Length: 159
Image (cartoon, rainbow, N blue to C red; front, side, top):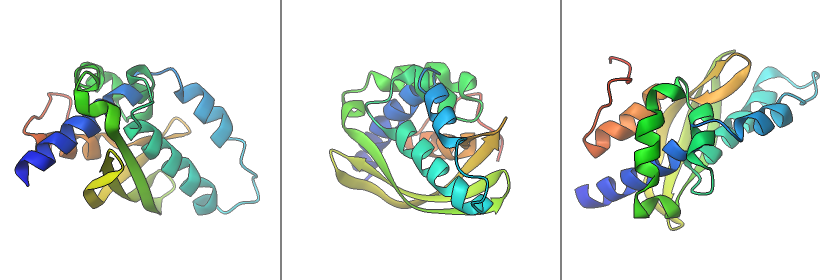
């Protein structure tokens, strides 16, 4: 099981690192901010949060885009770039099963990390944060995944 977790985290992190570097975050922001004002805040936020999480962990999202999808992503740009070079990175994705707003700027996310379409980490709880009007994967959640892999970069928040 530890080998599976390490492999999974390497894959997840490589996908996550790719998503945090900028690029595609602009297009997702323009799409998500155009939701109707008549929607309740949670109804408008849930699909935005889900999209951000799934893009961040997608193997098709470039590392430069992943940086923009991660809270304080610039702190982790090197980690994301390094993880993207892992052979497992090409097979990683995430599936969000639940988003619960805990405040106007934070949400709890329940997600599963998939390797080659198969669950590697099931029903993991994470945090999304809204920064400057856009939802991002919480850096604390990213750091928790890194800790499972056995590394804790200097940019991680203190627990």
